[in-house]
Length: 302
Image 1 (tube, helix red, strand yellow):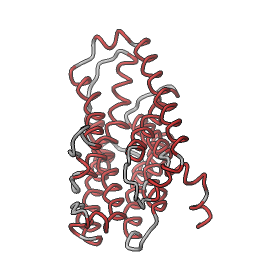
Image 2 (cartoon, rainbow, N blue to C red):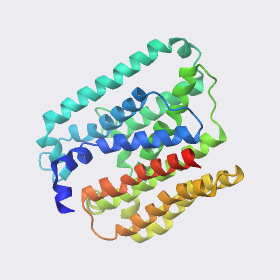
Image 3 (cartoon, rainbow, N blue to C red):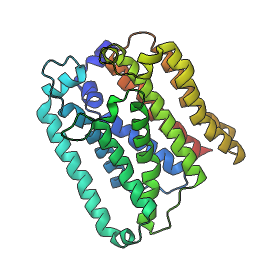
């Protein structure tokens, strides 16, 4: 396991945030299948991958602390040229897809509804505010208890609402947020938020020194699991199970959607031991990939 963690390819994939891009694609496919939408063309998913990697990498590129001991920050400094080249290429691909999409669906943009326009700009705006307003010290990530929900909200918008928006523009159909879409948004919002709360456990000591009141700092690990992570898992999963039961979903489909939430609780318990950064990046964040796969299998086969 040590050899795997120290492998340059492993660090490239996980420190470089490319794994996040894969998770974003998996969750997008899951949400589209669960909303009974046909899958978008591959360029849409490539763009989702690109903007996810660019977003997460930006914080480490702009890191200015010369004495940082953060493993990932040091990796970015060591591989600065590679990372900047990657950022430029991924940004270019995302921009090209955006231009092509606008050219092919120009007429749909004239009939865009206020709600669609609002949602299109809402999630990127929240993401930008998470990093902070340029020239100021204001940043939503400095609000410890709010930080996980900001990230969860942005992720839920990207993988749940954006596919619906782009489908309506692509087909020039009416746009509507259904009960199912709302429940799936809530499920993804809660799931990613819980993973972010778990990730904050890694920074317990440094956050405490910085007086950043994350849930782990304020309540401790045990109480965070019992009174924060467990209730949020129940809310996120409970809404889907309730809907699935009333829609007569196949029991195995419901079970497959339960699996990732059970794994979240087991993983949260494993964090009472000190874990490496790569453990969090692979195991904790990897639960997003597990969720995307389980949800997709449930829709395809059951």
